[in-house]
Image: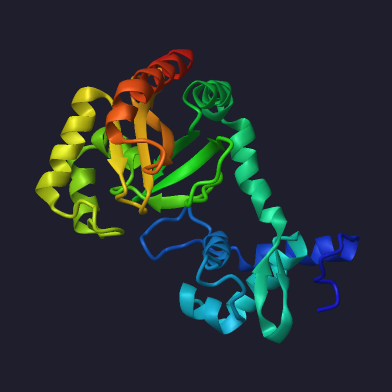
Length: 282
């Protein structure tokens, strides 16, 4: 296949277009006639790259996705042509920096991020602690933006980082606004997996923590996701009043305490979260 290369040329563009048309099939597994199966498979291959599979082989990707090796090979070659993956030694593959542009397009087009970022900078200035903006995606919290303080925490989080919802203050603020049915599904799967000895794993205690977050308008979590990490979050609402994100301030237990955060950080955090919500029409 001499045309299927990373360089952009008329032959390559024609070959790519032909392959996409030939492989675009309507998914009928669930009775839907409006889903393109080849796109679903392409994203499945991209999502197969994670912390445990940084440079997987074609066989490993096939096992992870449940796709056949020929199908994975065609998808990888197409993604290589588009510049999203590249081959390494021993028939292995890795993502290229171009995949970051997909998330960047969301960030630059999101009114939520553009409105929140200046306020996040002010939160850092007033608290001298790192600020983060996140939302709920499925069962996980996804960081949308982060403004670090001038110090290094044990935890590293950048836009796009995904963490479990239950052991984080962000997740609790977001789950507190979710429907009872969604919370029950979360408790059933993935459940309250312990990340540290401090992680709440009892469903009754967890529901109480969500009710407390809902009632007081913020949530503080200490060392439940990671030893030494302490964070507090408040909800951000859109023009309909729906909670669409969480604003958080994080520090280390060596620098501060839950009591200090409650007295000095929570008033600033909740005020700034309310200002962001107001600018979004909330």
